[in-house]
Length: 58
Image 1 (cartoon, helix red, strand yellow):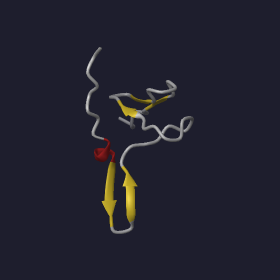
Image 2 (cartoon, one colour):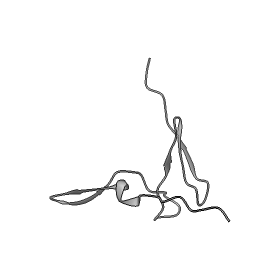
Image 3 (cartoon, rainbow, N blue to C red):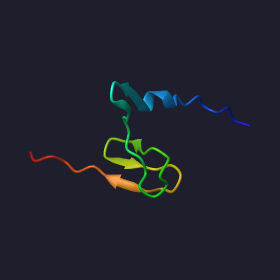
């Protein structure tokens, strides 16, 4: 059985005076899991929801 990788979830949040801020975007379908950041897209590992990043004007 493969070992689970220690996912440091605390790195996805930032504590400020006004409260806690999420640094990554949440999945609009799952409402609780974060989207993985890739070079050209954001993907949910739970439901396979994908958002493609648009390229800026050249």
